[in-house]
Length: 279
Image (cartoon, rainbow, N blue to C red; front, side, top):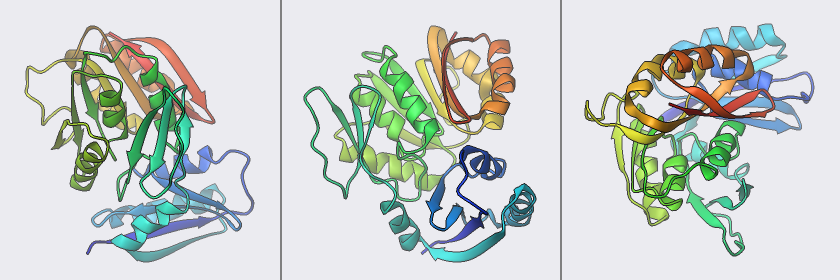
């Protein structure tokens, strides 16, 4: 059984915009956060091996204004259970409905339902970055196209691409737990795609190119893989990017433009940016 380290920032009051606090966690490679209003807290979970980030993370949270930073060990099963009180069915865009396996939901005619159990993987549709990706994906031609999901997390975007009619989908994540969750969620939704462990495009064949690439990862990782995305996305194809704090958007955009992309559409929710880029 893996043991995670919960890091909980105790805040002085409920913030008007939680994204600024989420950015502190993002700086330390933690995208999946859980917030409570009473008392006001924001928490994230350090995986085994990430404990070296703890001191710097605590220091940043306290410097940003946290009253206290509390830590405790959480067994993997308990960590997974903690998601269930926050993850509820959600409609995203026009016709996409994301719901957890443990919550019933009556879909309307024309809805595309995505059933998830994220486990320890990031991606429930409840974070602005995931919602932005899904909304952009729904308005992107997907039918018959070849898609790569780089940084797949729970597999939510890969599943959505399959449900929207993609010819083929391949998903990549550096975390084996995320890859396993992606495969499980593909099976739950009656779709199939290849899921690989690795960084960025590295696990994919060197000459493989795609009509559409999806990347909901932190800004620094987007900047790092932008040159590879420029080589992997076919001319006229799209790269949907998210996980970007607004303050970092210009840096991500500059890296994408240098790699041959232009911005087609941009969504801002809170301080989070999602964008569809065209090569």
